[in-house]
Image 1 (cartoon, rainbow, N blue to C red):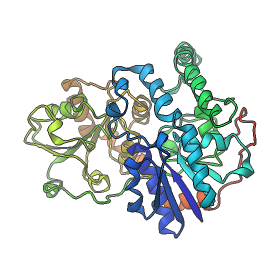
Image 2 (image 1 turned 135 degrees about the horizontal axis):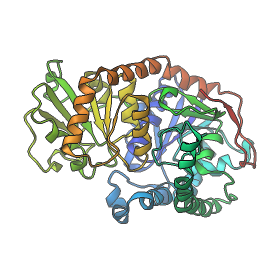
Image 3 (image 1 turned 135 degrees about the vertical axis):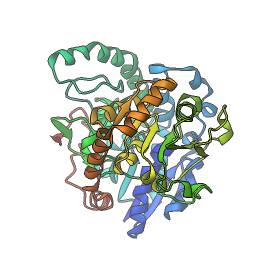
Length: 444
């Protein structure tokens, strides 16, 4: 089988796509990775061939502020709108054109893209017999609309009463007016450049409902219950990143169980200011004799930390998660979806503190599932952070809940599920030319 992989050039989007590609290559399938040049070298890690995005979509997003200097002055919905319009929607016509160029010579049976790689939309809105099968990989929380009418991206827990649902009405109206309507107008302009009519449904519903298969990189227990799910949705467990070429640090032997390990990370995107969480964690736990604090800088230099490193802390630019996480007692994170799911797949509880990108929603799910504490801020105080970490370390309920989540992850054979869905997919629900209706199936 021939497979075209496409990935938004952000680490949290590329890693799951690479994991899928690694599985397919290992079973003898021919794979092309289509993403930005900044991520292209990683195709070789899985034995795939690399083809870069067209120049207009070939963005280097490893340093977001350098790529889009105007973005760092934006906050809240303004920054979120900027992200979708400039990072995800502007590349659509160029990604789509690039897919068509590749498919002229590489007659792929299936195109697999992360759910933010919206260059697939012109294909999904066209004729089914004019395209390969399309599989989306969900790299964030399940973003299709909820039964309780909660506003998009706001981090609201499930509503269980009519009074709670009514509380969501005004915030939902505001987000629709200030965010959803503007980005949809912008999206329609980008689609028009590819000769596609305006999208007749919410773009986040479309990304889940229109592909032939939607592989969601988590388990049902970490997603809010719904009466119905869009028919393409299938949970596949954790699409964890692999060790690759990241070397173990010289202090690796210290993670021998003699002390409890607190691992702090701000991921690879919202890590421009390590003082928000990493530095605060180091300060909060500096005088805890039973704890060793391990920090990764998401690729930024270790000297980006302003203050001296405490004696009970160990710092690295990167660390291989598949080696590290089994040795960890609590993960402190700003709520990156991949990090949270990798931790829960191994039964590690969390302290989360993040509001940007999708992090408010991911953090809310941590609290809802009982697998950790959500501090509901991206800049927690030293005292609040210390208390939360000690609570997760010392109160067994958090580890027990994370253990139950790990047991659910263990019921899914991720490799087998990926192969099943890619090679012998369920009967398609894709429609030709009428994306206004959403096909659903009973939820889990």
